[in-house]
Amino acid sequence: MATLKEILTRRPVAATIRLTVPAGGARPAPPVGPALGQYRLNLMTFCKDFNARTQKYKPDTPMAVIITAFKDNTFEFTVKSPSVTWYLKKAAGIEFGSSRPGHVTASSVTLKHIYEIAKIKQSDPYCQYMSLESISKSIIGTANSMGLKVVKELE
Image 1: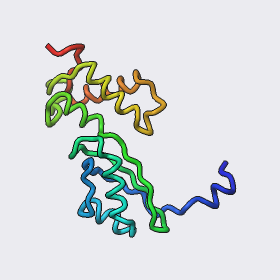
Image 2: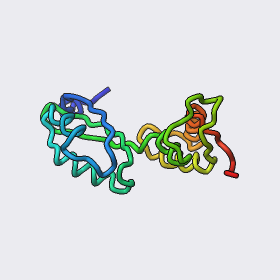
Image 3: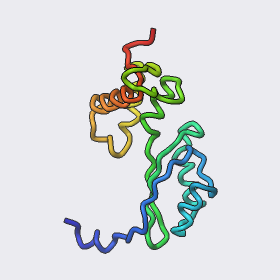
Image 4: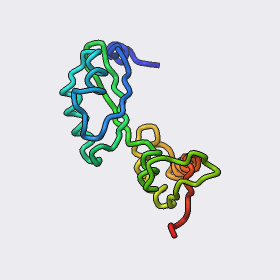
């Protein structure tokens, strides 16, 4: 149950905006500009904050961002690490997964790749309480559905 103070300080939410923006590449141009502009949010503040938070990633890394716009024209946002499929494609050195997963193998990744991706994903808000083993199993499942073979070591 929420306390009275929490209820009184809660700001009414105007919208929740989900975007995929390249790391360090937030500009007031589309897709960021129109998405934030319709809720009268400060574009330059978002761009500066987003670019500062994502500077540790390589440029053009696709970052998922969830922006909560409030009715008083303020906002908060959370940045998630890139998707598991993006990491798997980079590790396998491919652009696309298999067109027939289970029948045609697109490429292969090692268990070390899986473990490294799991360590990165563990910092995400929705994975922080999961064990590395369970995150790794989920990533192996994603690799299988993309037509990637998981091996102990590359030949």
